Length: 411
Image (cartoon, rainbow, N blue to C red; front, side):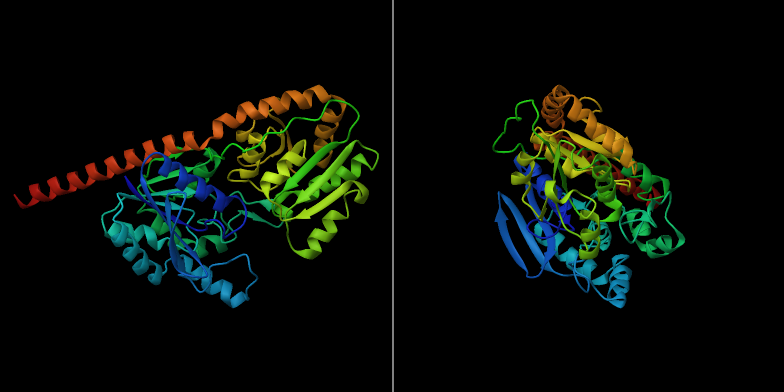
């Protein structure tokens, strides 16, 4: 197949797991022998080949593309309004589809490349599949999280700000997500009409180097956190847990990521300074071998958890909050532990279990390596190829049926 992947962000641009996931999808499909072109946005327009994948970068189709940079309230309002349907994106994506002539269009998230891509493909008779990576279609924040809690459903403000996205989603022919939680949320709110859906877990390539767990004994357990330092990510829960455990507990803490300076300063103050190393943005390949266990304490309902599968691939067990898709990723007691989101005492208890039973840590490490086999690029490519083929066949059958009915009408 010829597959056009329209991605909200693609490395080296963007932050978090989204760009990495987009790259993994494109490479996995290329490895299956398909012709793959990625269309994304950035500062400068270019066309280059990376690892066999054509990457076409467009200048921003909206008033800006980098939404990680602080903008004025007016600029944000206009950006969000255009994300409901951007005429410029419609005509530009029609050009890109016409130039590449794909058999199918796969949108991976849809910010910046815009929901108008679905309309562009529909007007050209090309089926589309959307890969859900956030709640952006339902919530202007993309998180379904407000005032310190998860939103059970979109508020009136988000419904009004997402009406165009919901209408455009009815033109999508298939939808995939990394966890069942994300698909259910969108279906509940009437997105994607009768488009078939499939859960295809994210993937991560096996690390090039492996490490050995330190011998059991009295050494401090290295506890890691990597990601955005924001309230919804639950870093405050980890800070409260470390404060409860105290400075004499057998742990060291390595914190990687970034956030608003005032919040970062406040949350780091909860950690024992002599035993905490704040790294800022850090390369994942160097981070995971430096820790013994990863904590993912998110309060918000994560659509997936890319850092979890990265850790598993390095043989690092994961302690996750019971929130969103996170409990789907690990096997409790086998490759990690689970605690109730926001409960810092329960998180502290999980850490104490590892400190008191080093053999449990060793078993979880082996379990992490075993669990990581579920999240391979090869498995992702095979599952996604099958689903794309099914959607393409279904779209052809629907088109043929319309032609037959049209013929019957005129006969």
